[in-house]
Image 1 (cartoon, rainbow, N blue to C red):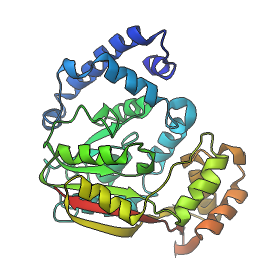
Image 2 (cartoon, one colour; image 1 turned 180 degrees about the vertical axis):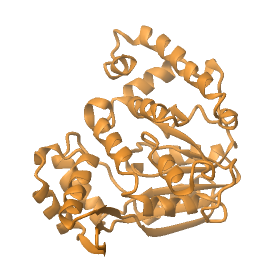
Image 3 (cartoon, rainbow, N blue to C red; image 1 turned 30 degrees about the vertical axis):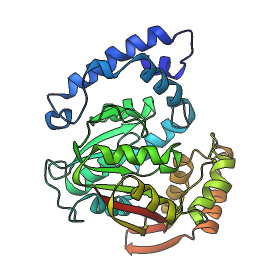
Length: 332
């Protein structure tokens, strides 16, 4: 019910909705205290930080392409059911978030994922490492739907924008991540400076996106913008811009790299694997204008990325598309 009210926000229902949301958001914080005492200590929990302007701005901006009515529901369901599809890329990001660039995390290591969606990276980390050996995540997202869905998944989640992470205390976390949607951030410089502010000394900041002119950036421009249920006319990144963002935020030991961030699907036949790949891509990017035409989407995937297939054993086939992501890692 509250989700529907936020999605239908307007000037007429603003004052009443702000009051309800204040109560709801602080109830969520209180309910998380017993399960996540360490993470609660990283948050500004005073009710004074949630003024009417803050909540009004959040509601206005929450109705984006990841809202329930747009492609948020499909994206979230796809992420939940396809946790293993992008596991290789997530592993690389997790290593760069750790100070020793390994997957051996201290149990108290805290990461803020500023574009968490419904907690995809958190869930993959738990799958790879086991929840007892995974770092602790603060899942942060601008979409109210995604924030609520992460809570429903049993994850620690806060509702805020990457440019204004008002919940997070200064110098309180070990690492911050911007991934799987960094091109959506409107004020990139402000967001990265805020992330740097949240870091402890020696903390790690990682930015992930795709390079302008790359197959992935071209795919977004040609296919997602024209065949999704929502627009997608966001500029991607150059190596120089990523370096500048980190440098301008006062960070050091800045590295710009390309990493493999593939989609990998395994099934008991090649045909099923190809079908699943096509469905995964359609759901992930909300490509409703193809009307479920699996073969047409497969043809486009092959055209833009190339589809690699192999037989793993007598009962398993793998199909894979390689995406080269651009990643910046830096230290405070």
